[in-house]
Length: 130
Length: 387
Image (tube, rainbow over all chains, first blue to last red; front, side, top):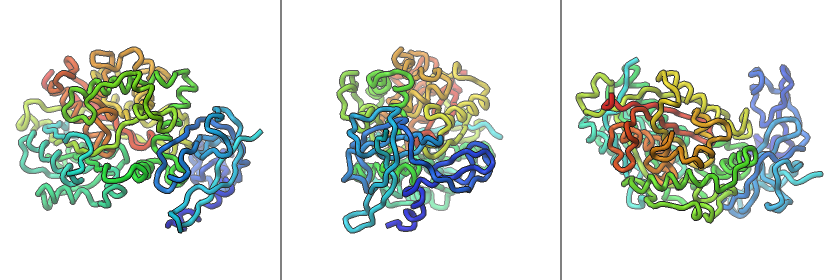
């Protein structure tokens, strides 16, 4: 049980809240406080649109502990329309229909569970969009 | 700075050692290397290990191995850098000897992985990536490498079967390595029919989880000849890092840290890739071999797989890799693998690689990667017998 750890990143997992660099206007996700473009401090919150496209993807069969009941599932690198890349699962799509370049949008889903009586962790996944 | 040489090497067979514990494996490799160096005491012990906490419920592994080896009182520390832990232990030893703080240092890499179920192993391995933004989403090490491989195939136009040659070559070389886990050949057809793990990665793209330990003894080069007639000089040792998460990379298909650490090593040794006689690269997955060859300057961008297709990675090719089986076929005990690479390179430079001997090998490079390219440690070694 790691309640505080999950709570700490709620804004990121529920709303894709990243940062905008006040110096060079780079959009940053996940938040990292130091801008990767200009290396100055960047702590201004920025809410991403949740729109993007599939940059790469894979369907995995051997899941790590906590995710066993969901396997097989498809994971992807999604290039957000504002620029950054995000690592996430794809949902509401057959594995065989996923293509590089496919437009996707963020939705909120259950990510994992901590055992039968444990906490459910919700977060972003991405589904095909038009 | 003093010149540093390897005066002793030791390794255990890689495999599923159900009857041996973490401490026993570490001790066997250490004792074997000390015997090889005819050494009875050391000044320090650096133990590379990636997963003892998650897979063996044991930390403080430096003290544990020193204790078990009867070296009570000695300086002993565990060094962790995920899959690059063993090379990181070697790096610590190099710093200590080169800097004049210690004369005789043992660098051990040890990993005990097979006590746990596959789902626990996957969870432990995924700790090498970004815990909050990769592992939290259900990503595994295999699937992160699959994302790299899919994009590489997309950008450079290769088919999955084109990656077979990395695995076929590794297995062919492991046949002659008595310490290897899988001493049998595989065919491109077997590669093509292997079980998918996380497409496009299948079982034969991926190196096997295993138990094992390897060790080298470092000493000032000026003292090396007192202990061995075949010292191996450490010509360069270099570390570089990149973003912990794949999503934050400047360029997904450029292993920047691998390029930077190789460039630092070349500059420090005053040589270039054309001077290297063999390259023990990080073949945890076939895609990592391709990207490593490109980052270290042996192939242009997108040509790493082409080098394998052309047969140039085999013994006798332009740049032989994984000459004793690599992680794919020798086996990949994660936090020990970097020292297996160094022990195998030393065997080549001592002229003791048997049927797999690279003719006239003088300069060998090893490169050990932690995470999907986040920590990269490059060493360049030179055999002193051939001078």
